[in-house]
Image 1 (tube, rainbow, N blue to C red):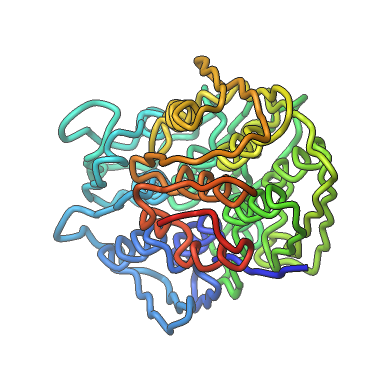
Image 2: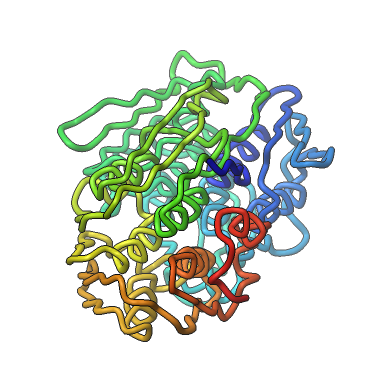
Length: 430
């Protein structure tokens, strides 16, 4: 049995950093991933006046309360949609003036999904160049607090939910979000762990999240937490191992129930999956995940309520489907079109270029797998998850894949290629 570890979960890391900046006292965070996305959040917080000391090896000390200030220069969010959207909510709640910018990829991603509800709460902000896209200028409120909001998002999104919760908590105003589906709940878990009155209730297949400011003194307890390993990063290694027909254990990853639908899909395809929970960090369950390949994988379908819980793992599942004898379906995944790239289009075009039958629809893919050798090159358009997915495909026996931009994986998983090398003896060219 091969054993590996993965970097800390960047979704959790972003939120721990932002919420530690709101806490009263000294927070200590360890296990932060050395990813470019998390580095963007750290840089932005420092520009806003947050006392944040880097103690090395993924450890930081954050000391509050923060004397928030208007940054002298625009805040550079790099390629990180989480940084941009969560910071928009935080700054709207605080009433701090700033301009947010990003790279070309991030500037092509939609922002209205957080801007519209924040404006409904009374936040003042305006697009600098084109509607719905960065750069975005957040303006100081002339007077008054944010207004209470009851909101039903059109798209179930952990980033939207997190942005609105940050605005409500930092602005001390009531909030109710009613989601048709259940996205990741990292923001809610960490806020409750720090003492904020955030309530989550099931409503049919959806979820209601409430924050009530009355009766709360506004104090968030400091954090002392180790960020668990990123289950989304682990997904690509688990798929590579299954494609090679070998067993693998990934140590100390986050096992948040809103993040492990991917493992259920693997089980549905015939793989044996063992999960050993070992504890909690900041309200997040942590443990080890092991996979054992079957004699043959079965076709599978991903659709409906399961999609929000595995949206980042769909590229990995798509390449797995390409090696399963039969037809697999992915439906209800239109959100993939507005990630770092149009992931549906890129997956389809790359698989087709590798002579895998893949039919693209508005919200999904139909993939006809085979066991024939696959040899060729793929284009990533700088998307880290596309690169890691096709690297996993290259791990399959008889397959050899050239990835055009191997360095793009550093956005989320520095050291990916070395770790993949421990899982497989070759088949992927950089």
